[in-house]
Length: 498
Length: 141
Image (cartoon, rainbow over all chains, first blue to last red; front, side, top):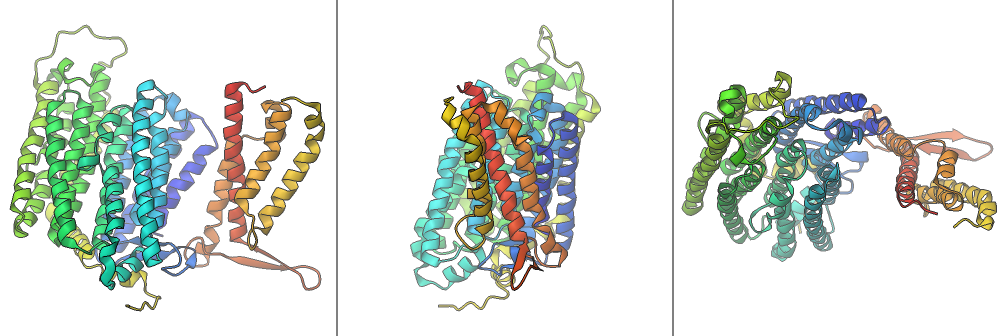
């Protein structure tokens, strides 16, 4: 059952191999995405915020086979991935050229989705690496689909950096396996908890940290992101913004809560320092740009800092806040990119200087922008506010004063860059311009539908914060007390503590 | 590289490559071999034809698109996951059927074999897709 989020995209991708008619590709692509969303809802209702479900694939007991594990954190990520990717599949119908769709855009969409879902449910370190590779390959195809020179330039940067990350990751796995002789995460946790020499694993931990840091675009490693994210079609950028960096954060949270728990003094300080720098540098860079997609790209980085901040504080509340923030970010950030796509369709550019007066002519678009923008900036009752509130509260409780202050300060930077887009694109008086050929006069309502879905999701997440928060706290608790995870996965395995 | 020797030898080379690729595929469960290497060998047969004549004749002998090979191969691999689920075990669990043949011999058929055949087709399809695309792009002579 819990393997379905991987099997459905695989099945869909296989179906998409057989024909290259655009109509067929569209129908299969979107219905596949919907099936994934429905399955993920079913899975979360099964896991229910309490249990952990495990599936020993091929019936090989852990730690010998590959275990697939869904705890509350994974289930939440699956649901939000399903929701966002369904909205994006619908958006792609309107915003991806027919030509790219016949070149099997949706096939790579689904293999990417398979990689993301696989990374969320796997309980095996090497399997995680495999899913990262699946993701990397399909995202490289997506980023260069269409083969414009700019896209290839961005794609090469993206590929090179991520291959380096994979190399680090693989080296880290090699060292880990050489020392412990296992790749199963739960088994690793048992071994490392009971090993006094676990501090020797710091080499491996550092390699993992760098690998996931590159994937997640944290402070010293983020430069590949803004230089590649503005090149592909905006639907692809939105897809990447929603999923790829978050998988890096997910993996980081998973390994740092489950088995890399030696030497917390050093690692948590490092994580907090990196988080602070990521927030501020990303926020500053976003404030200095005038191209919508670049602003938003830098802004992704700044938001990643908050999630790492939650991990660095390392209390159940902080982890819950980080997860909540991640989900909010996937909804809102994707939506801002979608709105950027709408703006581009109306005005033919992403440069803020040459856009203006959108609110007057398209009030609905303005509202659709202001929901995610205010959510990101942290205006109550939208979810960004609660996310930051939980994180900063956890920070104060753990007496991390300085970093919490930095987080508050970054909130102001975010507000600034969002207001900048708002002012320039929507509020500023329209420029006298010669209407170019091929631009749309108006947007049909059906093209705005994905933005509306994501906007509704954002509002729901914000207003229902109290209701949903039990799930997040439970996810945080499960992460902090890894005993339950270990017991469920290694149920039939008599392990000896040495 | 159009030499008459290769053109004349082609049917035999092709037969040998495909025949042994199938043998490699089937012995792969317990001995060196398997779907991956078998698929590579099978694609070799068609690559030889593309070298000896041209891509079009090779495509004609293949009778189908490489992408169809990839798709059906993946589909077989995916199908091999299903019997496990139907018997109430986790997916991909190996399921075996024993068919008695003459005397003491039995034929053991199982989902790992189906998976391997899927790999065979997928690998052959992927390699052929690469080679055909490259040869057509460079207008290989």
